[in-house]
Length: 411
Image (cartoon, rainbow, N blue to C red; front, side):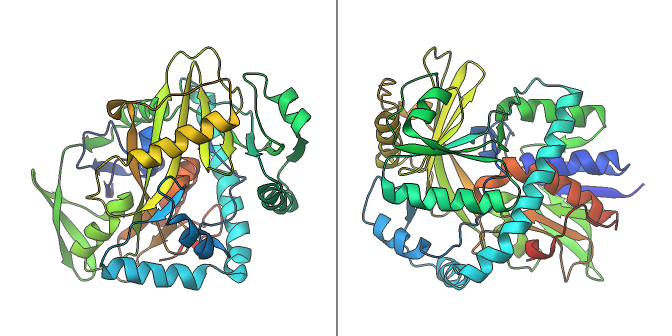
């Protein structure tokens, strides 16, 4: 039985472990954390086939430059002297064009819809993670934003997604949980949501049943490479022999890749969230508050708010209160009756989303190291795309035809 070692115990790593174990592989997972935090836990819990436009898109650079001068803006590149940042920025610039977006959209749409199908398979096993298909409301307050959001909705509809375009009154009729102050919205009926922590707990339970061995708080220090293949993984608790390696370390992928003499251009996009528990009055339908790019997700009796994309580095562990204040301000502008207050620092979560300069995830066999498969760079879409990514990883390693075309997910 072939042994597959997965580096990274976030949702991408664990979904890869699940599908590989189902294929009959002996699977081990290594993660340097205690696996109770990270982007797989604090994210907005949205499964979003609607998100078919990559981060690298026309107009994003001009918008990003404007936002850099606003401490509460939703997108920010932290200026610093760094060759990694310069290279990433140049590649982002090269990808932020219409041709790239046109090629990326069908690939992202197919991957997303496949992932949603796999989530629905999981719900047949168990629905302890509150999977719901209420769609996603893109809410806007200005005509200018409305034009962009409606255009994106029309694009999504052209890919066969079910989209409703709502007036102010229609939003009010649909969102009965609390009052909204908007001029309109776009309802993506194809989207779904779940409670991320509870899904991770379910997934770990499934991996336990499949005899997947998880080593948390374990540091991968080096690799033994012979004939362009990894034969051994050197960790702080000793060496492990292996037949296949999956790199699923999110924002930490570049530093692990360096140990394999490979280069991956990924920068962390820092985001924040906070969760209010047992909230009686709350929105009933997940939403993006478009002007502030704030995500709002009801999770059973709780509600989670999240936002901002701060391109930075993994040592940036300070909570930027201005960014969190920007999220709070947006919520209160869109939902005036909620009267949300600034959360305390201990109630504010932050995580690093792994952003590639193309805005596309990397799901591929490495071109130089024969037994290395990469599954990283999913940015804000990690939870949404995790089951599909895990399934593709198992198909790549098993040398099967992949369920969806992976041409756009190469390194």
